[in-house]
Image (cartoon, rainbow, N blue to C red; front, side, top):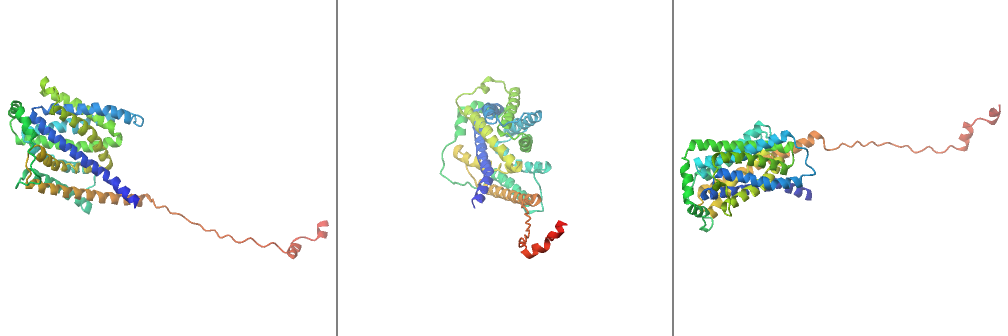
Length: 390
């Protein structure tokens, strides 16, 4: 009984880790909204985010994995560069560019394409089996569709207003926008809305993030040191994002950090979201695969909807509640399907490997020793003394 309970606890660790990751990433979206209202260039925020992450994570990786870390190869460096490009600089900068051309709501909705794209890429790269005729495979496909549909319903359908708790009368975004009205107006008028181009940019962001999950699984297999791989990825992303930001904005005022919401956003997104959460995410990808990590992504929208209602003065509507229910049901369906597939794979390994030992028991029958010969038998067996003398 204790062994079964311990196995359940071990299996729940990746689930708990991914839930914490989504809560942390939801906080990143809240800070994104706040710094946009404060007038900060988002490209600079992305560069600072990975720069802070690299500064914090590099010494940690050196001391924690110093004795067990193997030699770094050019293949690992190249994979780290590509991971930093796909999951860091490209995915983040495409996302914020698409958000500027459309809206924050539309860009958040587009992130729900990540599980579907990851599922297709994982099948193509043979990290996941489709098995559409089996019940677990059908559950994964149905769960993916439920999650995407629920996230779209949460975003695009409002419905009646729902009051789940008393209003907090807190609107941090409005306060920052009022303080920086001139810069906010300048940013709003600098780029005209373009829904088609914004959709293309957000779709590209989702594709590169899904590709990063696949590449991260490959990197974790070739170099299974999470702190070191995350540090290399953040270093590459910091260099790429800084060069990209300098190409568009060289104003020293935009790069200057003070004790305000900008510094708080950089520390939160750089230290917590990019250091702690990327390490946890890499560990979960190694343990359960890239599709497992991507199925939790729509949960972030639910957390963002709740935090936006509490901190940003946004109202909850019926569409948000119904979408959250569909997201939870889809998440449960995918987890159930993956659990059934994992159990079937474990049974197959036991059968193929022959882990049940066969013990051959050979029983030898030992006959009792013969009784000692009688004196008469000894006399008959021994030759006569006269014969011996002759």
